[in-house]
Structure formats: C-alpha cells, structure tokens
Amino acid sequence: MRPEPKSGVLDIAPYVPGRAKAPGVAQPLKLSANENPLGCSEAALAAYRAAADEIHLYPDANTSRLRSALAEKFALEPERLVFGAGSDEIFSMATQAFLREGDNAVQPQYGFAAWAIAVRAAGALLKAAPEPDYAPDVDALLAAIDDRTRIVFVANPANPTGAWMPFSEIERLHAAMPANVLLLLDGAYAECAHGLDGFGDGLDWSRDKENVLVTRTFSKAYGLASLRIGWGYGPAHVVEAFNRIRLPFSVPRAGEAAAVAALADEAFLERSVVLFQRGRARLSEGLIALGIRVLPSATNFVTAELDSAAEAQRLDAELATRGILVRGLANYGMPRCLRVSVGTDAQIERVLTAFAEIKITKS
Image (tube, rainbow, N blue to C red; front, side):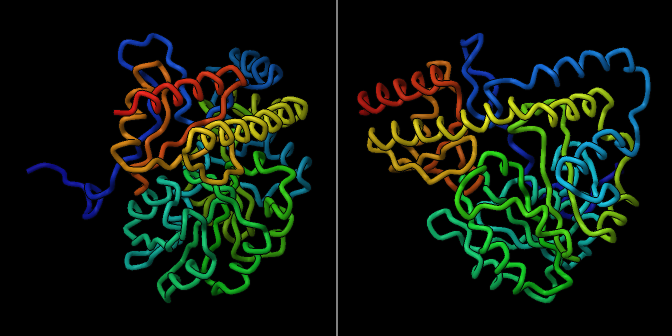
C-alpha cells in the first residue's frame, strides 16, 4: 500500500517550459520563453538588491506597498486586488474557488497551458472552443458554455498564438454570458498591445462587473519573470473567496519591492513596448520574406506556421544546433508552429539569418 493521488491527477499533462539549454552551446540565445531582452528596470534591480537585508523576514501577507502602488496607478480599489506567484497562482485560486466536480471551464482551442492544469487539478472538465485559423471566436466560446460552465478563460492578447481581439468582442462575449459564469480576462501581454486601435485592457470596464476578473503579471513587459509577481482585479465577492484559500506569503519581500519600483519606471516600460512592437514587425517581415507564414501578433513574440510538423521539428532542431532556442508548439496542438520571442535588433537579425540558411539547405 502507498498513498495514491486522487482520480485524474496523473492524467494531467505537466507544464512544459521553453527550453533553456542547447546541447554543446554554453550560452544559447533563448527566445523560447517570451522574456524581456532588455532585462528589467535599473530601479527595480536596485530595489531588489536593497531588500536583501530583509531576507530573514516574512513577506507582507497583504502585499501592502504593491497594492497601494497599483491602486494609485490604475485608479483601482485596493481591496479588490489579489496577488499570487505569477498569474498562474491566481488561475489556480479561481478554479479552486469556483469549480466543483462535474463543472467545466471554457477556453479558446489554443489556450494557455496553465489554465488546463488548474481546471483539471480542481477535478473539473476543460472545454475548448474552436479557433478558426488560430484566432479566438466569441461565438464559438458562447456555444461551448452550458449549464455546468463556471469559468470562461480568455487571454487578450493570447499565448501561444499572439492573436488579439478588439475590446468590443470582449464586451460582446460578456454581455451574452450567464451571470453566474466568471469571465477571467488574462492580460499577461496587455502592455505589448498598447496603442493598437480597438484594444482595451479591461481594468476600468470591469469595475462595475460582478463576474469579471482581470489578471496581469510583471513577468513580461516589466522583465521580472523570475520573481513571479502576478495580480488580479475583480469584484469584492470574488476576491474575498480567493483570500480564503490563497497561500500566505506567496509574494516575496524583494519581489514586491522590485515590482513597486518597476511600476514607477515608465520610461523602461515604454522602451520595452517599443522594442516589442518594432521587433515583432521585423521578425514577421523577415520570416514572410522567406516564404513562412506568420500569425498576426500583438505580443512580444511571433508564431510561425511551417508546411508540416516535420519541417517545424527540423527547423527547431537545427536552430538549436546554432545556439538559438525557440518554442515548438506541438503540446498546444499546433505541431506545425514555432513561437519565437522578440529579441534585440541584433538577435532578430541572427534568427532571420539562421532561418534563411536552414531553409536554403532544406533537403
């Protein structure tokens, strides 16, 4: 006899992170995890280092400094904010709080992998709405909702496709959803879409909604991925449920200090957004010029669709031998696709040169 996990746990596919190592290459160019190639704000780094003297102390369980900073910056009610170890922990809190056995959650077909893990760990069913040509479809999402649906996940912009919806489509989705279903709007890449006509992050819009939770992260545009700082804004009754089950001290003191400083450094954020937007345009143009289809993106990456799964695997492997790591998307049901994070100008040119040389030597 031995302890056995509950039914369904071992059926969950574990999360597969972007590769960080290439055989025989000491320092590969890692474009597999959508990290910020500029690093992080110097102010954030200084705040993190200064907090080292407090490493023996528990974090503030209420994340008070970051709570106040976010509330001030975005004009939000501080008591309606919730924090976690990245957005992922907030997704898990949502499923633990609102999904019962026999319930289901709905997501677009190519939804972020952490959603599926959280849903299935809660003992519920995940339903995937078709995404014609890799783009989220509001009507398909609505058609997937049934009387046991309790959460609808939507990322805008989306990972791993890069697709985005005009905010009018988010509004249409919400207006047609049952009132007892939580709309979880994942804005991990919201900063990357800044300035796009029709895009909205949903924060102000969600203020008077009883069934909307907006999540954000410091991992992407702010460059604090290793610190795992995620936050959400939702109605009081949703946040109250989260506060009953969230683990204490999930946001470290040094991480909170860095996030507060990063939030104040608007110049760094602006530089990052400009780099993302210019870089994804250059990557897209360069790959298209090589005859490779590129999915439209509003994020800090582009997703390329090759002619076959075998071709995608070959390119992935050959790029790795040249010290360039990208992300194959077979585990997302997109076996013909490779996701390439935006790098610096020099890194992008290195990637495009490698793609061109590999395509030329295609057997």
